[in-house]
Image (tube, rainbow, N blue to C red; front, side, top):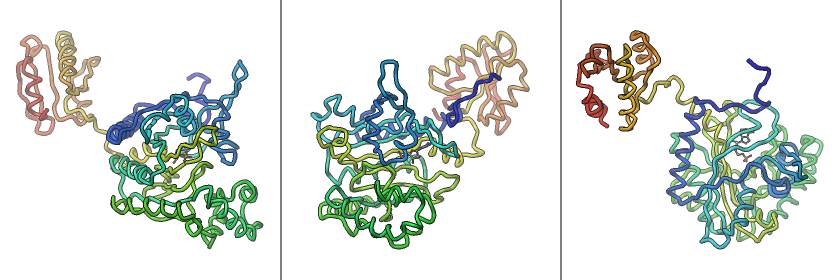
Length: 424
Ligand code: AMP
């Protein structure tokens, strides 16, 4: 033990975590390949202004959670709290405006937010996300929801709940904000202190305040944006919902869903599992349209839609689901006794690797009974045993762990025999 520990709110990812992280990344990679997304990994540090402007001054992230530093050269940089502003920056920096639209990019990597340490919330956490850039069409809103849903389905989540809403655009949203503000003003003394500030800064933020009393006031009859959408936003949203119907993707309308970032326009959505809030897990994937972000960052308008998800949160749920299922995926265990058998097993293990057959080995162990115990614990189907006699005769024993039956085969034939038995 040294006196050093990982920083508060940050943790080591160990092999148990990678079991799930790798699975999630594999599903993302497959979905990305199918839908034609290209991977992108921007630098972890960006100019602070990118997030201050992009993520938005009105957000918790910018107000309280950024890890920022000044370089020796005097630049103000921030560890990315989310990917989307970096992606818009990269879109312009690499001339992606000239590519056929929509440009489709996906990512999987670490983000940093200086949050209060709490269950399921870290200061370094991982996100994956998918972004469609350069299309106004409602099709990409529907596809964003569809692919988010497909990822969770591929990870075998059941009873998924998709909440959708439209928060309008610069035509209709400002008017809605006024209507909302006049409703909330009469509750000024009942809403929380943060929401009193939000009344001035951005009343939409009040809609997703976690305070129970504020939620009661909202859900008790606050005006709904869906009643105030302009014709274009209304038509757009109608088509998104119709495509979800066509795709038979189940959803519920949540007229108070706004999401925590300033840049969203029109469609917003969140997907959670039925047992929402269980262990503080909540939303699995969230996202929406952000037509104004490129302009906010000083570029030309780039209508866009995307989603982001917390990898750790999904990994936790996968881990919960697979509790008690700690058996290895390998079907074969290689046990050996004596020096000659060790040497021959070393070579045999390599031969199995070349044939892409996973074998568990304990070449550093000497006791056969200990090796058999380990094989039992690993839950393999077959154990290969090479003792001194077998090593001298170029043979090996194959033991069926379930029936306890065993037979001796020529060493040269063992791979073929295992392939036959395991259907490889
Ligand atoms: P957001 O960008 O805030 O919409 O977050 C997208 C997803 O990232 C959330 O649904 C969470 O699963 C995950 N996430 C956000 N912040 C954290 C955090 N501090 N620790 C772990 N996961 C997080």
